[in-house]
Amino acid sequence: MAFWFGLSGLGLFLCSGCGEEKEGDVSAVDGHGEPKYGKSDEVLVPATGQPEIETAPGGEWASEQIADEVKAVLKSLIHHEVPDGLTGDFKMASLKPADLKVEYRSDGIEVSRGKSREIAGAGIDEFESAAKALFGVYAGGKPEYELFKVFRVHLVGELIQTGIRFESAGVMEGGGRAQQRAEWQCQWLKNEDGSLRLKSLVVEDFEEVCSSGSDSPWFANKEVAVLGGNSSWAGQLRHGLDFWLQRIEIFHGSHLSQRSGLAVGDIDGDGLDDLYVPQPTGLPNRLFLHQEDGTALDVSAESGADWLDFTSAALIVDLDNDGDGDLALATNSGIVIMENSGGAKFVRRAVLKSADDDVESLTAIDYDGDSDLDLFLCFDYAKAGARSGEPRGSGVLHNSSDGGANVLFASGMADGKGWLFQDATRESGLDFKNRQHSLAAAWEDYDNDGDPDLYVSNDYGHNCLYQNDGGKFTEVAAAVGVVDAGPGMSASWSDYDRDGDMDLYVGNMFSSAGGRIFTQEKFRPWLAEEEKGLYRRFVKGNSMFENRGDGTFTEVGAERGVEIARWAWSSIFGDFNNDGWDDIVVANGYVTAADTGDL
Image (cartoon, rainbow, N blue to C red; front, side, top):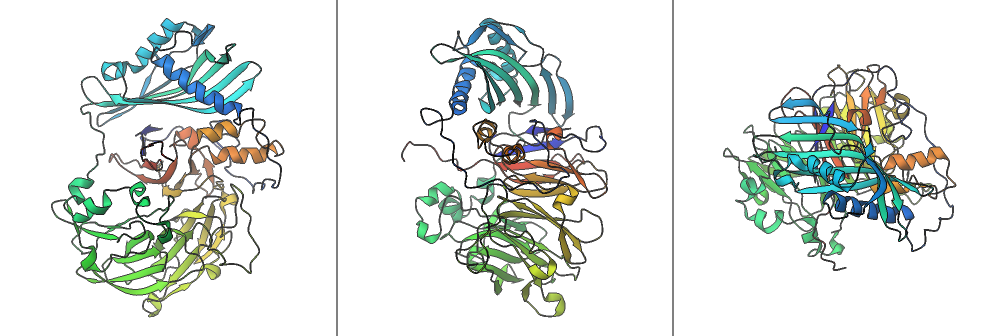
């Protein structure tokens, strides 16, 4: 069992153990009725070059117009503002199921779940009572916010069927916080003037999370307390990307999709983790040393690590096996290798070059068992002109082959060659399926044979699992059942069910708009149903693959309740409440600048 705890910007799935074990495939379809990938053959590449279908009158799809109105009517109904928003024969289930079952209780957190599928005739008074009961957990009967997302719209004659995801959150009476999440199936009819009236509402799933004893969340922002004593905080770090986009010219590489990672590790050998923070182009990267009082001291300039080049990823790792953390930086000038010479001072030792320069992920691993760390780089877009003599790759939504080429740099330390790294991509076998807009890499010995295997998440391609056999890799994703054709953003391994083998969680993106559009009859009607299923999968959300124990996997994300984490980017396992079970935290969202209406 898993549940969602956390709202805008960060999602947290707490694991309190696993559900009952099922034999074989859990199901042939996921929680939305779509074909599961699981263990399957390669899928078809969709047809290209077909004419686009004209949109509905007014330039918009009918489903999109309906979705906007559905959200407006539901919001008005739940706040008792539309007395005529229901049909005369309206039927509903309880918005908050009467038979809620407590499924988790620990450390002040209580999680209850249920569903209300039985419906009965009702009017506006009954709906208002149900809304009051729903929000009764909140102080004053009012949540801080509520959200309606329409992920499915079907038109059946005069009847309109919609799938709704509902969320709310706020402070409880007497302190503490609560949040609610539900899935509603609604039916609607149109009035003569085209407005919508709600005909029925069924609660397919409901979850309520209550955190008692405090009105503060588990996690609190501490950047001011930790970093605020440094001038670099007020002058640079406290500003978001939207601020710098207005001040740094695009000529210097500043753009909306610019993404910079960070690195954590012990630089000065005091046993405390330090922090390296890359910044947007034109701003110096920052190195902060962890102080005993919990603050962080900016030593960027004196350390020699204050690079101005755009840095998309960084690592603090011991590359020369001398016991201290060195730096590897993925810059637009190459992979900069810097030796820690002691006292948090760095000396540049190498700059590794590759055909492409759009590095999205940088990982270190001893892939060949020679006791030194090698480097693996994931690239998104190919550099213009880098492969002018090669056949042109295809660029389709979920199976592209025109991205940058990932690179494995093997270290020469073990051979006494100092700071020499050589491109071992081809000889290791990692050049297969290697141009699919890769964003993340996750290493783990999933087959328990003693060497690390590699999973690569691809934004516009099928994800890859490379099985390591003595330093030689074979791509086996389809064979073992972990092909994923979503917009792969991240991946993380864990034995989350504690059965002795490693499971896999892949961060993708959930789009309610995609869920609506990709299920319409007019959406690319020339495509085969299997191909349409790939588009629907592309927007369904994250994927969890459970290891069966024989090295093959079953997809169980819907069953475990961890598919939908909004517009997800990074995801990682970790035991956040120290109960012995690995939980999942998911970073989500996008640029959050205020909308001033100024184009």
